[in-house]
View (cartoon, rainbow, N blue to C red):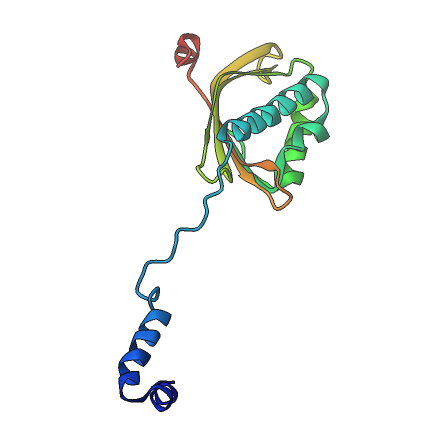
Length: 179
């Protein structure tokens, strides 16, 4: 290119050619422009997660195991004290079906919070749960209270699904005080 400019513009052309080439590379040393950020409505994501938990609680009340498991991701991991981990929606569904066979069953949640990742692709739900069930040792209804932590991940179809579910009971004294 320099040679073509020199042939056309004479002795002054090498300087002109260098200036032209410098202009072509003017942006080469600059940092690339920041990509446009997508604004995520984190409150909407939190509401989506709370609605999913609400769907599960309503499904427990209606004794609908399929609806209760519908919030689970296909590879969900369920961790519940005193029981082996459940891996996958089928294992979770089997556990829910077993729980729903109990006539005393009732699931409640309070003090719910949802922390949403900046990108909106993950959220952590935390609540205090109250689970009523038939105590196998006494045959009487019993109430368990504890911490419920659920991790939701955005799926390929755009929905938020339950990825990890951790249920941690509190000792009776702690449960009575709500901590």
